[in-house]
Image (cartoon, rainbow, N blue to C red; front, side):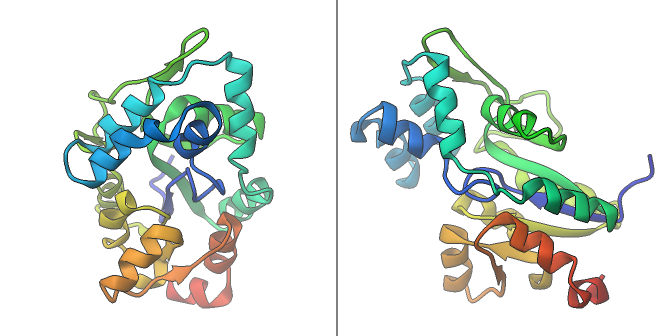
Length: 223
């Protein structure tokens, strides 16, 4: 297979889905105190990966209950159609997530969708917890987030591909800054951070908005 000429690298939680898994887990299965690792991460005390790993290790529930959270994450209902349209237009879509591959792949499998996914491997133990491990053997391993999103963007840029990026959180910032503003899509926290830095971006509400823009005549002309 030839190297793709157009690549959309995208975050998953809060980008392809409306909600983040870790927040739903805290809200529905844990307690506000379970967010202590996340607050420690925001304070610079522990890495992003460690924060999520510690939150996931607190989950104690039957797998059936945790699987209900995956539906509550609300993946874009137009995801499959948007992906099909992008593929037909020559776009290769890559998921780059600092979350856990266990729930990402479960959601995509349930939707009948196959994508290139770079995320932290994990397994849900009987009765809990969700054990997430760092992908130390991946060429895109990052001690901070587990997955080096910026490294994935650079990988495709070195292959002379036009690379777009879509994300919603602060962990997406380094990758988002690597792509031209015409191919930089942001919502929520990432949008705020880019605005604070006076960096241009294209806002989106749901993931299919990104696909729609990339398939528009204006975007095609840019490519």
